[in-house]
Amino acid sequence: MLPVTADDHPHAGGPVAVLANPTAGRGRHRGLLSRLLDGLAVAGRPVEVLSAASPAQAEAVCRAAVSDGAGALVAIGGDGTVHRALQAAAGTDVPFGAVPAGTGNDFAVDTGFPADPLAAVAVIADALRAGRSSLVDLARMTGADGGERWYGAVLAAGFDAIVNERANRMRWPRGPRRYDLAILVELARLRPRRYTLRLDGVPHELDAVLVAVGNCPSYGGGMRICPDADPTDGLLDVVVGGRIDRRTLIRIKPRIYHGTHVEHPLVRTYRARTVELSAEGITTYADGERSLDLPVTVSAVPGALRLLR
Image (spheres, rainbow, N blue to C red):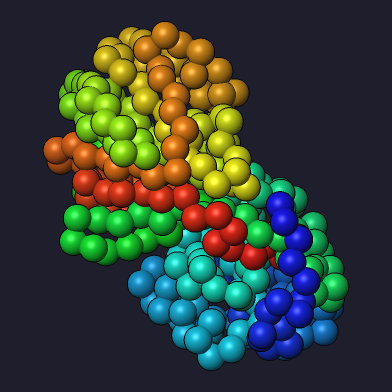
């Protein structure tokens, strides 16, 4: 990660805007919030907690804070909270801190923040005091209608995205059992789909059940779907699981936690600066959040984010 000094940031003395999700990780860190805010205040900056009642509002208040001259933006929560805040911080001079306090904390951990929330706050506060930040890459995706989204970790555009979409449509059961049931339903319906990939302009036609485009290695709370992805190399890693049947997918799935699934003969890996991806009937999920329908174009944007590390 390329270090950046405070002199490069015109709002270095501004307040620290904090987007906190008290329900992240099923609320297990709710009682820590006041201590986390106190830890940030040690840096000697005003700390302003942003209030939002929905994901759309979370993005809006983060954008407003950046526009109003925030000296830093900090997300306390999981990958979903980070994803919302990234939409405001990406491509700006405002440094960003991620405090892992959710069920999935893949971006925070993969970019070097401690897994313990209090330890992560201490790192962020020290960087604020020292005026220190480090540049990392982000991925920018563009839909067919020209709409844009940023993401930090992984874009899912295959079986996992389909399962998420199924779970989001279900009203019963509640909690994690809904996701488990969605997996069973979609496993029963599993079939390869025809994808068109253009990697830096080179076309690839293939049938696949699993497609992921990673800026970082992990998604889903530690599943190393793109194990060799590096958020400082200016490239995207693409992992494709081909014509895999149900039994093979069930066997391969546990290997994703160790990243060894890429050794399977039906799994292919690619690397590119720009990935054009199309298939029928797929809604993508970026950082675990519902995102754009295919087709999309994903570009690696080097140094798009300043991390408070």
